[in-house]
Amino acid sequence: MNGREWSLLVACLLAIAIFSVASPHYATQGNAVTVLRNSIELLLIGLGMTLLLAMGGVDVSIGIVMGLAAIAIGRILGADGSPFVALVAGPLVGALLGCVTAAVVVLGRVPAIVGTLGLLGVYRTAVFALLGGQWLSGLPSTLTDLLATTVLGIPVPALVIAVAYLIVWLALRRTPYGLHLLAIGNSEEKARLSGIPVIKVRFLTFVISGVLTGIAATFYVATYRNVETSIGSTSALDAIAAVILGGTSILGGRCSLLGTVLGVLLLRILQNGLLLIGVPSLWQSVVTGVLIIGVLGFEAVSNRLPLTRFQRAPA
Image 1 (cartoon, rainbow, N blue to C red):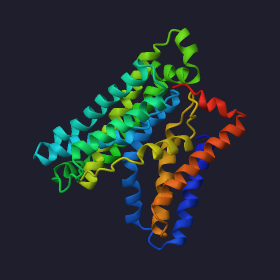
Image 2 (image 1 turned 90 degrees about the vertical axis):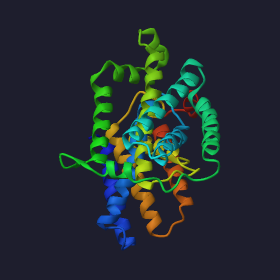
Image 3 (image 1 turned 180 degrees about the vertical axis):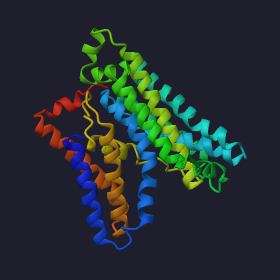
Image 4 (image 1 turned 90 degrees about the horizontal axis):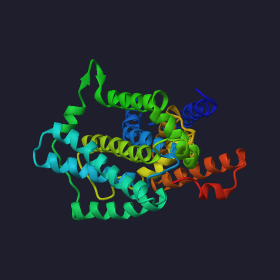
């Protein structure tokens, strides 16, 4: 663990101690389970966002991608379809939308922030059109029951998170893909001149992020058994906040998967604690925004980076 990761761990423990004193309902087993349960989707989305930011990219439409994947899962379950088909549908829709995003940003050579903002509007309209302004509610519990089982005594959600983390870690640290990804994040032009398949790596990264988001949608539907029109509206902001809190550079070229996990936990601990002490949920987004600005400001000062470099970050 590096200094940033130790700092995040201490911050998590400190936040838990403060909220435990402030609210008698905080330091309970049930609330701890709630915090961990609410972290699953963000952890999966955060792993994908870590790859994107390390590459010098971003995807602000990722929350709505989760919504579209959740709608596909909900439609299958609502038609009394097999939960195993629903399990495949989430990652498949995520992968397809990841291909769409990659086609716009990578093949279309559109800056990532611009391209994914545009797709955010398109995807959000698709969510409203598919739902018709109504929730998908009262979905069967078949998927919930399936994901509530254990494998060798390990709960399926914990196993999925562990496997996803391990695969992404191995990809980053033990394969050419990881080396190429970080090289592109440091300098896309130098990476291209050195023979790295920049287009292939960038395209694949958007697809991987989409698959992880599709898996997150599966857990969302299994937990809540409904899909509302506002699904995923804050997921991208929360994921970006957690990832940069964890030490991944928004300029690219540096990342920390463990830092992302700790960043997600800190964010969820803060959001849950604020809710329990009576702070309106609207202010949770304010806290998230302040954290992002604070971390970026700290990095800008500590690295003596002019603001214009953030504006010229590789897409």
